[in-house]
Image (cartoon, rainbow, N blue to C red; front, side):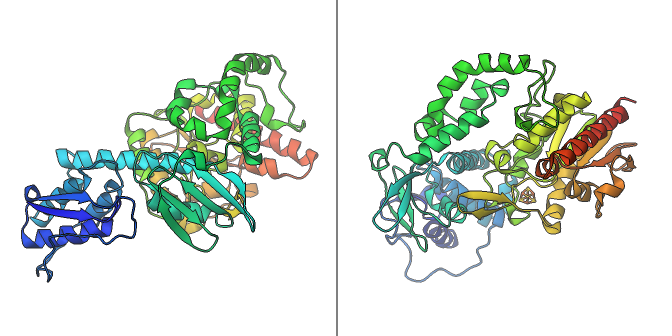
Length: 485
Ligand code: SF4
């Protein structure tokens, strides 16, 4: 039996070099065992302890897909992961070139399950890391505590540097810590929660912010605890407010329902009450759209996936008669993983209700599925997707249209119109007039161009806000008449 001792928990290079040598030597998977020798020393020397003095000759090629799978699987907290992936590499070397695509193979299935679990953990880390302020003599350091299920810190460090480039920060976890000095990334040993302060001004900010955006009419405790498992709550400042918000949700919802709707001219559009018939559209959890959403989560067709928290796919019924297409997810959509849940989404909900459209019956999506932004301090400022990104992402919109086959596609803004029509559109010239979309995604499909609700939020004066809001509601009423005619 050969034994390969790797330098650390995510020693992908050490594993890959050893796997290559062993495969070329003809060492079968049952004759070798991989282990990690020095889990707390990231800089230890690793690789095959049984490696030959000279690398054996021969051709060793495995598919990029298999190596990408290995890179993710190797982050899994599963002692046998290196052996599992060597078994797959061995089979690829023996001639099963497309083994990564054999999704019915038990070993491939196991690897895919591990990779999915790592990706879920990655999402949780990106969404639930919360920094606390620690004043230091020369600067302020922001420190966060996080308990990942897998060994994901190294692979995600660059993500946090990109997002918080101007901050000096540390993320501490039980197995590894990562420190950004403002110019360099450094890794250190694991830590414990006592090294992170309990409270600071940021904590109060997060609680206040979360309470302000909490919508009791949308409360689904099971969905919330599934998306934000309770194990993360103790690290989330806003979680302290959750029990109280849940207790008060029913009362607040009743108050909202009893409050008369606000006119467009009033200055608090986000507080518009939900009339009794309004239903929230649901994320798609099964069927072809769920499968598409799952595939899009791994999409790398353009660079937008990398700084974003997660893909934000469309949601709504598979047989919806109307599809609404926006531009891209915003900051809140990126964190929630759902389209149109931020301020523009709330304004859209309100306009749809006034137009008599039940959002639950509409498939709502975006032209681009990842949030594009520019970091500015601690804020993420929306950035417009360019033509390359719109083009790269159009495959997903096309698949959504092919699956749903709506009778009408409502294009909210110029980016959506560009993505659907494949040409530059001047909104003022083409809005409100039905456009024949041809038969590619369903017979007699029509399109209707209107403004994006975020445009209404940006208008500087009350008169234009009222006028444009009324025109937007009129467009939506027109849209409804087209699908009910
Ligand atoms: S924005 Fe679209 S094309 Fe780009 S990575 Fe995301 S899903 Fe893929």
